[in-house]
Length: 253
Length: 57
Image (cartoon, each protein chain N blue to C red):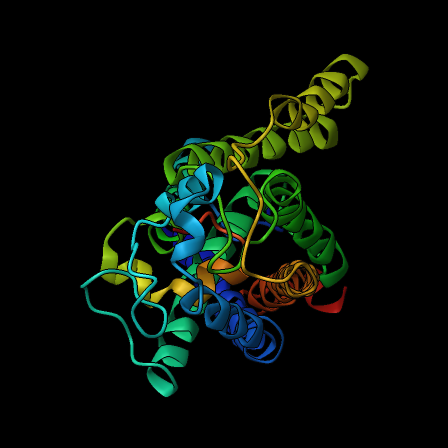
C-alpha cells in the first residue's frame, strides 16, 4: 500500500496548508457577508409572508423555520456559539474537506501519470475549481442565509450530477484526444445547464442584491485561490517525496 | 516499473485499486462535510458550506 500511503501523505499536507489559507480568506471575505446576511434573515418580518404565496414558499424552504427567534437558528439541535467556537468549526470543516478534495485531486491525477510540477498542479487545481465551483455555481450561485432556494434534495442532486458530468467531460476532452469524444465531453459539460438547476418559486429576498453579488464574487474567488494553491502544493510535495525516495533525476528536475 | 510514480513498484491492478481507494476516501470526506443532513454536522460546517457554495438549508 505504498502508493495509497504516499497519496494520503501528499494530500493531507497539501490539503492542510491550502485549507488553512482558505480559512483565513473566508474569515476576511466570505464569513462577514454571511453574518451580515443573517441580520436580514433574523429581522425578516413575518407578516410579509402571510399574504404572499411566493414568499411563503420561500419561507417553507427553510427547514429551520424559526426566523422569529434571535440569531441564526437552525432548529433545536446543537450549534457552535458565535465567535471563536463557530470560527473553529468552520476552520475544522475547511481542513477536513480540504484533505478530502486533495485526496480526489492527487488520486485522479496519479491515474493520468501524476503531477510533475507546481505549474501542472496549478492547472489541475483550475480543473478542480471548474468542476466543484464554477460549473455548479452557474446554476446554483453561492447563496447567503435568508435567500430563497428550491428544495434542498433537488439542488443537492443537481449539484452532484453537474460535478460528475463536468469532471467526466473535462477528462474526455483532456485525455481521450479524439474529436468525437471531445464533443461528447463538451456536451456532458453543457447538458446540466440545459436541464437547469432547481430554482425557487421567487427570488424575492430580504438579503440585498449588492450583498449577494459581493458574496458570489468572494466565495468564487476564495475557492479559486484554494484550488490553485492546492494543486500547486500537491505538485511541489509530490516531487519532494519522489526526490526523497532516491530518484536523482526528479530531484534535479 | 514507473520510476516517476508515487508508488514505486506497484503492479498496475494494485495501483488502480489503491488510487481508487484514495479517491473514494476523498469523496466520502467531502460528501460528509458538504452534504451530511445531521443537524449538528450542518451547523458546525454552516459557514464552510455557504462559502464553498454547497447547497445549504
